[in-house]
Length: 220
Image (cartoon, rainbow, N blue to C red; front, side):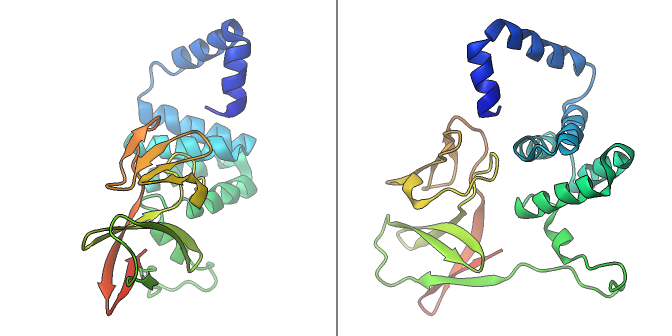
């Protein structure tokens, strides 16, 4: 729920209660995946980025595949038009959602060939491991991405800095000890294992990592 809707719910509970009851009843005959896909289309039509991010993730959690999400957008072409669909796909490509990694490698039709390979994940050199104390966490910027790096004994964990809720890039100030709290809506995460411990229900995205010759590498 956006901050504005949360405010209206508190300020005008009776009116907003009728609104949410209407929405719930209107979709009661649909399965969750279909409801979420319809919500995705309405958010694209209104070009509401926060809502689009929210319902795209909901649709995927409800069992929708990346291809089904794209099909829903393309089937709504008569209402959305190409510019809104491109707007939506541009946002999807920044969210690192499962199934959309291959889309980044698509080339324009005039240049594409059957032999064009899909973009593969790459190892990125994050930092030196020397001098990092056990239990210490650092925020690192590397190759256009920000991550939180935590050392646990001989094990290293590398988490995406973006909140899985709506993609908010969490700053260093969001870190207190081994707890990370998103400043947008208060989702709270344990950096010991990445799980969400308060408000939300999705864990941080953890990147594969390894130590090579005293350097910490992460794969994305």
